[in-house]
Length: 223
Image (cartoon, rainbow, N blue to C red; front, side, top):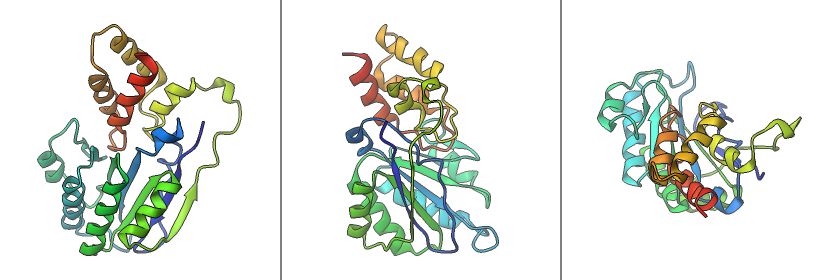
């Protein structure tokens, strides 16, 4: 298993998130998997969030973020964009995914231009994220690394299953559900794309990359 690496850009006091750090699987597959976050810091910039959140949503939609959401509502693959926008509060946390480095670059450029004062976090393979940040003209604040998995790894699911379940940092997608969905795909009861979307519904953060999941299903379960 090759753990992902996280690059964190911050515009206010120290604030980091690590639940997106432990995405696993083939390194080439991970190079098509980037996570973005918008975060506010309590007591610093945690009031009047909605206008700033709408700027993040506009930037994410403009560059084609494949999935994103507000944990207070859910992901856009399950709820409409308007519904998510309407429910934004000062407690909202926006999170999403990209599948291309070019999206990350343009997203960061747009957010930098808006200068909302919010923290921006980008997770991904470091060799992809660092060049993206430099191209966008963003100076790094800090970097968090995943050091891999320790302990009785023999109790973990197989590597392919982990490459799917670890895309939900709160582990809301259990291994047995992955097995259920992939069996249905193998039996022709749903397409790989439908399988990826079905799994993504249970990650309320919106950081499950159903596009990458679809590719994993096609490569590992249909050959």
